[in-house]
Image (cartoon, rainbow, N blue to C red):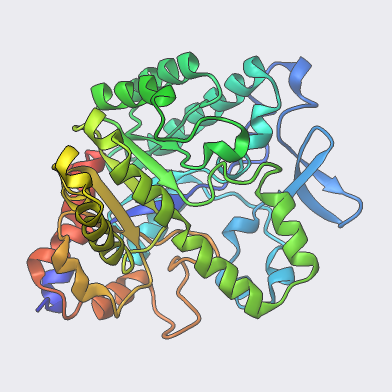
Length: 390
């Protein structure tokens, strides 16, 4: 079993965190002719709040994703009030030290969850906005390149531009790409279709992991529009169910990843299912193996889904405790995250079952996990996937 001293010796890598974009990220980086089209922070007279706006569409409240611990304990409507200040890289590093986190993988908020709206800007401006974000997150991570790990936002609507941007961002220090696994909802081919092979080939050649984050590019009208509808008829019971279901929404893409030949075409490429939890995945993979044999698929395709998974696939989890004994079935394929600073995260301590910092959660949750497995899950696997030294 893992003792406290052994855990304290592990440099924990947090594989899913988000950076709240500064309100002038795009307005300060694009040509004046585009200022009325790119995301910008404005006062919404209808709500009395400072919100993101794209064209005539109002998005989320600025800073809502970084609500404080006290705000998170209020009702959902109150928590959406957000805050005006934006966390700087030094702020983030200080918080990481407080939480007992050595390194963090950095994902976006606005451009990630509202990606379908960026597509509507047209190819030229959408690419300008994407490059602006990728430059910003590289600059943010430059405060400590070994502890802050930027992930590239890919302009997936233009495959040639996507490959060029991946190459450019690799030179800026990016360690992976953010990709969607439900492109069909946007009228594009499914993520496992050969249509996307140019991007996967580039990622494999550049040694960049492909990261499927739940919720990314999965809502045609954008996440804010969908969330507004839920907030207008908020019910805590419904919200809990929706959150739990959303976390598990990667189950179908994981199954497709393992059974459509994508792993066969790109055997050196690392695929990561982000913010999708852990405990159900060993069952899912075991079920795939069972039915792979049952249907006779193994006669034509001898590698089992579980073998593809072990070779090149990863998952991320945070609050789970009761499922952790299952880590022994896939010790090399799962990684720890906090989802900082989102409402479902460990970032400022869960309201239940115990009011603890992430470091204390780790100590409690991993107390009965064998030391070698704890070290892999908390550090080694992520260090390999994201090229983290230390």
